[in-house]
Image (cartoon, rainbow over all chains, first blue to last red; front, top):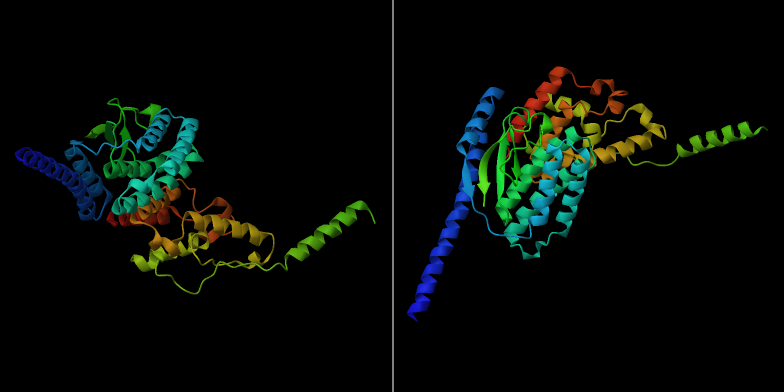
Length: 208
Length: 151
């Protein structure tokens, strides 16, 4: 009897610990959003500064749920990222098609109602971005890769992954606002600038 | 009658004939609740630019020129409008998720920056739909602000 009490107590501890972690993830997303709101851009310089500050501050380690079902989506995304970093329109096109297939094959049935709602939101946008990437020249591919990276990042936070990923930020792209991407390595290879300037980018966050 | 004449007459008959095929017009009297100008406060100068350069293909209301009455010009226009609305419909902007709205705004800014939109084939005929450097800047800045303020 005592033993079961212990087990219950310990598992309770673990559960609350997990909850806290989740809260942290949420909390960490908030400041950025607030920043953007406060920034209510009067001039562009201001905006860039606040964005940079935000990005300097974040240097975090986030642990997600272990989830293998998201692997095909993430791997297709990473292929796409590598294709763009290699300046390869062809590789990027193929990976975008792979990504579309991965989304089509994703099993939503195990998601909770709330997760499903958020997932559909992300998928809807990500698929549209992937479609554009699959049939356009590289400049246009890179533009949509910016929105896609936000989508995939949110997907990873929402559903989790069993992979270790790094969230990079390069302030030189995205019309001076900077842009993020996810990578599987600690070696910087910028998908927005390609071989011309491969090293622009710092790790903002390690996932798992 | 030579073969050439026969073919010519045939073409004329077809050209006249297709003028009688009824067409659906992209016009709507109702302004939907999801209309871009309903869900966001859009200043007048921005509204004018959007109306002149974007809404013909990206809303439920096309301001048709006189020559749209002529086939096959009208069919070409119809396919332009259908594709345009599929990508972005300002009349239904409010039905997009916040995430999608942000993506669309980003895409709008990029398309204008890259001179992809308005389409050159469209501005070739609609000279007043062309955007000046100043107008481009105004619209990009405003769309950028809106994008940052969407939660």
